[in-house]
Length: 539
Image (cartoon, rainbow, N blue to C red; front, top):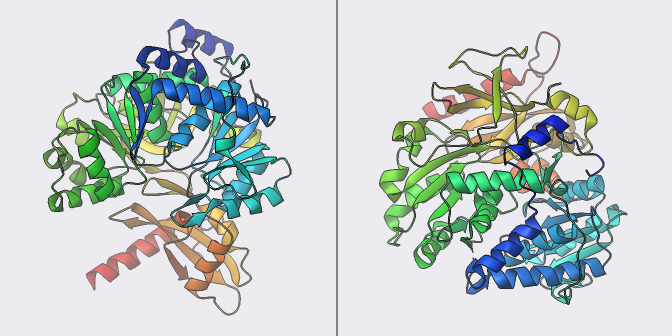
């Protein structure tokens, strides 16, 4: 096991193997077996590019050889920041084949996050596209390379400038090291409830079990066509069942640059898409867009919605609008995934966020003292199982808080469980804002704002929003002359944080309400902004 990672206790690992959860598969072997079985069948579609399983497997072998020629080796960490392109899959599986570990960054991350990922993971390489949506990732890479001494290589998909072009790395295949199924396969990002994201180590065993079970529940097979509109590096479109689950089932992935109805609806019609995954705000956009489009969406069988709680009133509109099954998905990059089943009643599909996908998932709903609450009562969700981690990477102090002594992960979600074992999500007990599926850690953004010379103190809270579910509001106590809102937002942009983390609203305040022990009462601040928004609507 990679240094800094927590293993499952021996008795649990033996049980999961004995029960057939962990079958000794690796991702490199998985792709090879699919290529041998499906050969000329199309694995990936991107625009007018169609890549078969056999071609993908061959390109992965050739790229693996090129990466090794650079000196990238087993257990090296490689920060991967690519959009929804074919090369994402070639790079991922090439790294899996040589045992190097992708660290999955999102296209929206900027210098603050990327520098941290590279430094903390001691990354040897950083893989990017050249430009996307007007943003030049090569410029970002120059900043990061100056800061991170371990970073030896920047590899670019596209025009490389002074860096290494990925097109120069496809070489004749060479023998690869022996990878074990219990090895860490990659590092994912946590939602980051405090400060910057923690890194989540996922093994071949546990993650392949997760996507295999997901593919079974979602009834994927070789005729399934999965449309990826969300960033594929995100856990939800990666494995629930996502793009990797689709490959496991021998199906076909259609890559979209984003979730715009113009692009997505055309792809559904052209490629006869059978399943896709959205977050609630995007689902609402699609619902509103259908009336003004005349695309043939009849191939769509399943529309998944996850990443944040989906309003029941909106959920009711999915089936009559798209003539397909809604599947609610509630999960986390740390492990546990819940699904409504495709044959569930409409009542269950609309009003719950699903039930655990595995019979070996263990969940508890507890009060503040970790005592189990009664059926139907709201409490904090704890979980452990064959694909839920036992600890974050290099985070001993945080692990002591995030995991119980007997290995249950404290998810930070407030839920209740109905009589049939389905979860209804009621909110979060951690200081994190779920902005339409993008998690914003209040502490991280507060720390950036506190660096401004005119900011004395700041507290960031969620505020209700009909479209995103939650938006961010920063309450700022100024030091002397208060800066302008535009000045503070410009300051944050210049510090290189992702756009979705910049507060949607900034309120200036003379002092913060406090709790009985003198802490800032964010509960009261949430009430203040909610009342202010409500009075604005009424007036």
